[in-house]
Length: 131
Image 1: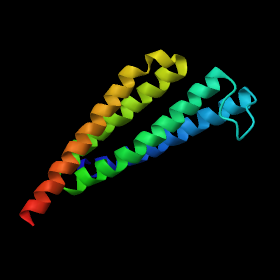
Image 2: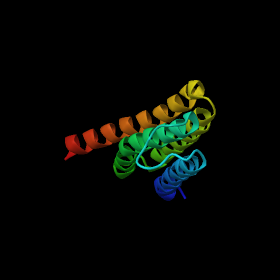
Image 3: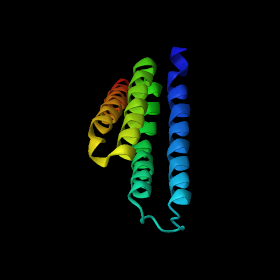
Image 4: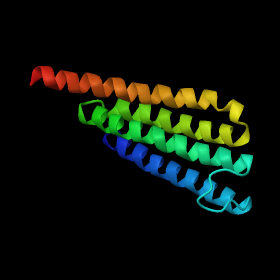
């Protein structure tokens, strides 16, 4: 199971991306926001920001997750990845309800990402030094 944890986290990340996409599509339909508009109703705008911010964070998160796993931190990268996913879900749910309450979830996600970043840097650094 341990060796598959980063893959599970990656799959959960894809599902999270799909979920945020679905919420935006639903809000676009419900509030009649015609594409390509990205504004028009506060609920739609919050959903859109959740999707975009999650996408932006995913671009930084997935490479560090896999670098950390590749360089020997498979279990801990997976755990940090689960923290990131849980933080992003918390962020999304909070932001959709009240934008002012998104901070705690965002910070939990950032802790997960920072942990994968540190592991990736340490692992690559060790590999470069050892040869």
